[in-house]
Length: 132
Image (cartoon, rainbow, N blue to C red):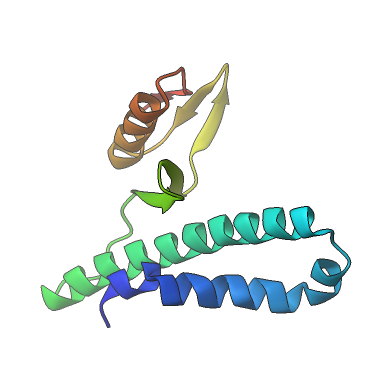
C-alpha cells in the first residue's frame, strides 16, 4: 500500500466520518456553527493521526525493503492543507513526543528541531526554542 494514500481526501473523509459517527449524539445537539467547528476540529485530528501512521508506514517500508530492522527514529511530519481558496492549515506530528523543558524550550531529535524551525519560519513569530 502506498502510505501517501492515507492523506487522500477519501481517507481523511473516512476518518472524519468515523469521528462524527462516534460522536453523533453530540453532533445532533449542536447548532450549525458548532457542527462546522467540530467537523473542522475532527478533520485536523484525522490529519494528525493519519500523518503519524503514514510516517511510520513509510519508514518501516523503507527499512523492510532494505532488509534492515525497523528503526525507531525521531520523526516530524508537517502537512500543509488547502483551506478554501487562499488559506492553508498547518498540521505537525512528532514521534516521540517533544520534551517540554520549561521557559518555552523543548528537546527533540534533529528532525524534530528542524521541523520546529520550519514551523517558526512559516508562522513568522517566536516558537519554542529547542535543544538537541
